[in-house]
Image 1: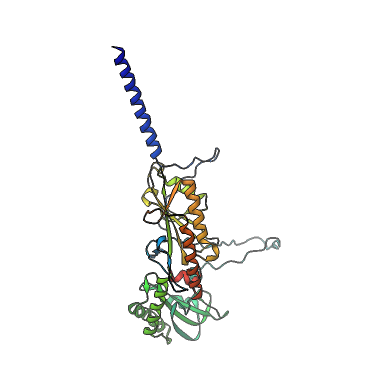
Image 2 (image 1 turned 180 degrees about the vertical axis):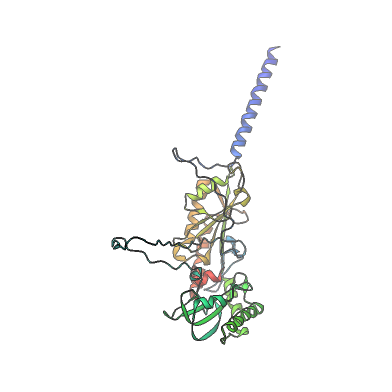
Length: 400
C-alpha cells in the first residue's frame, strides 16, 4: 500500500470519527433537559400517578385572554378582552376527621395544660357560598313554625343545579338568626331558595328559570307552605345585564414559555416549577401555585402536554412549551397575582432558558407586561366598583 493510500485511509477514519462526534454532540444538545439528581443521601421521590378522580369545582369552561389583546376600553371603568377556552383547577381542603374513645376506668381530672379543641363542623353544606340578592334570584318560603334541619334535608331537592346554574336552599337559623345552608341538628324559622343569575356559561334563561320554579314549588308543596317567587321577566333581564358586565370584565392571562434550544422533560419542568412553590394538581401536566389560605383558588396555573406528563420515560420525553395562566377575577388583587406571574415568567425563563411568547407561540417583548399590568388596574377598579372585587366570593361565583 502506497503512502497516498495510507494517508487517505487515515483521513477517512478521522473524518468518520468527526462525523460521529458531531452527531453525538447534536443528539446530546437536542435531548430534553433532565431533572437534576437528588442530593447525596436523599432518595428520589417515587413517581405519583395523577389523581384523575379528584373533585375540581372550576372545571367549567373559562375564558383565556391573549396578552396582546388586553386593550383598555375608552370608558374609565371598563376593559374589554377577547376570550377562548381553558379549564382551571381548584384545590379544595379536606374535612377534618374526629374520633372519640369511651373510658372504662374511673373518671380522673383532665390536665389543664392541654385543653380540648372544639370540634369544627364537617358538613360540606357549610362551605357552600351564601345566596346574595346581587347575583341570585331568590324565592322565599315562610314557615309557620320552625322546622328541624333533618326534616328539610329529607325533602329539599337533591340536585344542585337548574340547567347550568347553581341552585341551593338556605335556612334562617332559629337560634342565631343567621342565614346558612341547612344542617342536621339545627332548627330553622324561615327558608329561601336561590338560583345564580349568570356564570361563565352565560345568563340564566327562561327555561332554566322555569326549572328553578318547578324545583322550588315541589319543595314548598312537600313542606306544605306557600312560596313567594320572583318575577321571571325581571330576573332574566337582570341576568342578561350581569352577564354582559361579566363578559366585558372577564380575563384570564396566559403566557407561553418555549425552549430557546433544547427541549424540556416533564421532570425538569416539575423540578424548576417546584423551586418557585408550584405543587402538582389533580390533572396530569398541571401544577398550581397555591393561595396562602386553604380553599381559595390557586394564584397561578402551570400547564404542559398531558400526554408527556404520563409517558413511561419522563427523562426522554420532550416538551416544547408550557403555559402560565392567571384567572384574574378569581384571585384578590391584594395577593399581587400579576406580579407573581411576572416573577414566575422571569425566573423560569432564566433557569430554563425559555423564550416568552403569547399563547399562540409568537414571541413577546418583556416590556409588554408593564402595559398589561396597567390595563389590569382598570379592570380591578371596575370590578370593585360593582361589588364584585376580584377574589371575593361573589366574583368567584360569577366568573366560574
